[in-house]
Length: 89
Image (cartoon, rainbow, N blue to C red; front, side, top):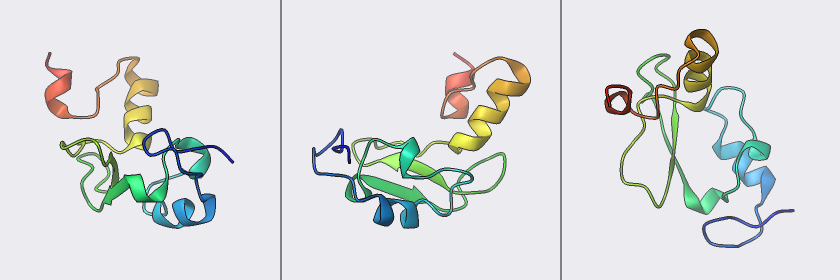
């Protein structure tokens, strides 16, 4: 069991996996934060319309979910960033 990188509590993988269900193909193994330090925003991804993950310490909701961001990197070889505005810089 690993500690949350944000609050240092031990990550309860069962609770985090339940919270991550709206995100495609992701489990607690993909995260280093606990369920208390994550926010899942439904229907926010501009590519698939799915949920996105927002660390509690961040105030900007990403435009891409982790799976779609990875898909764009795989298909184009370029990282679009988490928000569309990052791609234009």
